Length: 194
Image (cartoon, rainbow, N blue to C red; front, side, top):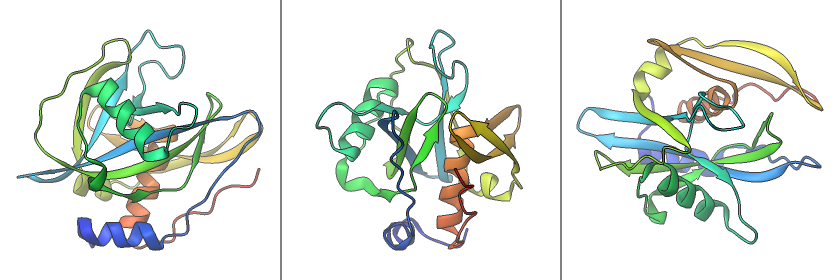
């Protein structure tokens, strides 16, 4: 780890953020919860309910579609509270990463926040089947695999992080890659052309 959480706030403010506006895609926000506990920094992931119509059973960050007139940070914090019961104060938000499109026709902005940990969770079973945490240092040590995929009207490089018996990939893998690049001060991979 080459940065501190406060250093990450500065790097997020300085990073060149890719903003996307894709016709026909709705806006969404996800929270990238950076847990601060006695054992160091970890990321919290959800496992989506198998009953959902989009991305059922996949690993995700908490989040979802923005309501009319809703601010980005408010949407990420609201969705996180609704899905997993995790309370995050607005002043704990460190910044945002690049926009990422999803096959469900959303363009989502990841909101990175420092979260005091542990705290009690309350999972919404209609949306979340499970949660787990991964030490940030372990994710950074993984060399992700990648492949280029055609997703509706655009082409993207998709990253995958195998961790124990789980595969963090797709939209979520791309957000992890983006976070780790900013964390380490790397420019990151350019987005593939449309």
